[in-house]
Amino acid sequence: MRKRAAVSAEQTADTTKKERRRRREYREIRWDRLDNTAHLFPVIAGESMSNVYRISVTLTEPVQPELLQQALDIVLPKFDGFNLRLRQGVFWYYFEENGKPAPRVREENAFPCRFIRQNRNRSYMFRVTYYKYRINLEVFHVLTDGMGGINFLKELTYQYLRLAHPKLQERLGDFLSSDTSLNREDSFLKNYKRSHAKGYQTKKAYMIKGEKLPPGEFGVMHGYMQIPALKEICHSYGVSINEYLVAVYVWSVYTECMHGMPSERPIRVAVPVNLRPYFNSITTKNFFVMVSAEFHPTREVYTFEEVLRTISESLRGQINREHLEELFSYNVSNEKLLIARAVPLVLKNLAMRYVYTSSALANTTTITNIGNISVAEEYLPYVDMFHAFLAMSKGQHIKGTICSYGDTLVFSFSYDLTDPSVQRGFFRKLAADGVQVEVESNGVNYE
Image (cartoon, rainbow, N blue to C red; front, side):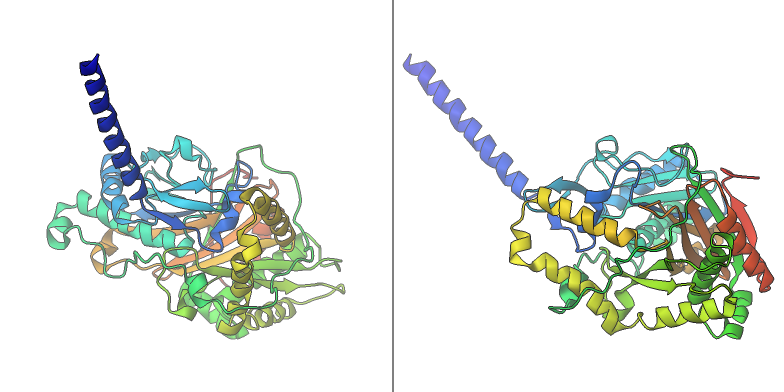
C-alpha cells in the first residue's frame, strides 16, 4: 500500500509540473488589442455582410499553386498582424497568436468577398486564392485596412516570384523589402485628442434600390483608364482625380436613379481617408476615417459642373489634419471612458450595432481610393496590374474602389443589384468627357 501511495505521489507531482508548464506556455502566447475601428467589425460581420475586402495582383505568367502555398508558408510567420485569430473576452474582442499552419491556397471557384469562417480556415482571418494569372488576398477588415493588405500581398508576391525564378532568389535572398512595415502601433490611441464632438453624419441618405442578384452572387466591373489623359480632364475642371471620380459617381446616381429630379434625401458618399500620411504613421493596423461627400438636389436642373463643385468643396473642407483628428478622437474618447470599458461585451455589441445602422444608412455608397501601388524594380517584369474592391454593407448595394499601377487607373464597382444603370452612367460620363475607358466584368448581369 505504501509503494502504491508513493507512485501516486510521483504521478501527481509530474502532472502538476506538466500543468504548470502548460499554463506557462499558454501565458507566453502573444496577444494584442483591436484598434478602435476594428472593434466594430466582429459585431456586424456575417454571411450577408462579410466585411471582407479583396486586393489582387495580376502577373505576367500563370500562377503555380504549389509555389504560392510555399510562399505563404514562408511569409506568414514574419507578419504578426496576419498570424492571428480572434478571441471573445468578457469586455472586448482581442487577438491571439494563431500558430497553426498557413491556410490552404485554393483555386478561386466561388464569388469573391465571402464571409470568412475561422473554424473552416485554420482560425485565420484572411484567405489566398488564385485564378490563372491572378493572386487574390481577401482580408476580414478587423485585421487591417487596405494599406495593411497591400503591405502583405506585395511581400507574398515577392516571395512567390523568388520561388518561381531562382535567379531572383539568388540575387535578393529571402529578406523583406525595405519599404515593408511590420509596425503594430495603435495609431488611433497615439494621436487622439480628448473631448471632441461627433463628426459623422447620421441623417439618412438616398439609397439605391432594385432587384438583387441571386443569393451568393457578387458583381464586379472594372473600368481601366490612362492616368495622363485623366489628369488632363481633371486639370481642366480644377479638381483632383479623386474628387472627379466621386463626382462622376454622384452624377450617375443623380441622372440614372433620380432622373434629375429633386430629392428629400441627399446623395452622400462615404470616402475613407488613410490617416498615415497626416500623422507620420507606418502601422499595419487599421488607421483610417470616413469623410462624406454630399450633394442634395433641391431643384430640378443641375449641371455636372455644379455637382462637381459641390463634391470638391465638400471633400476639401474635411480632408485636413485638424478635422480628421476630430473624427477619430471622438470614437477613441468613447472607448476610453471607464463606464464603457466596464460594460460587458454583449451590451457593447448591442450599442455598436445601433450606432453602425445609423451611420451606414447615412451614406448612399462608399468609394475608397487606395492610391498608386508600386513594386520593387526587380519584380516589375512580372507584375501586370492590381485590383481592389469591397464587400456589400447595410443599405449600400453598389460600391466603388480606385487603385492604380503605373500609368493605369482602374475604378472597380462591386455590387449585388441586377440593374447596371449606375455603372453604365458612370462610364458614359467619363467617355463624354473624353476619357477612354476599357470595361471588364465578371458577367453576372450582361445584357
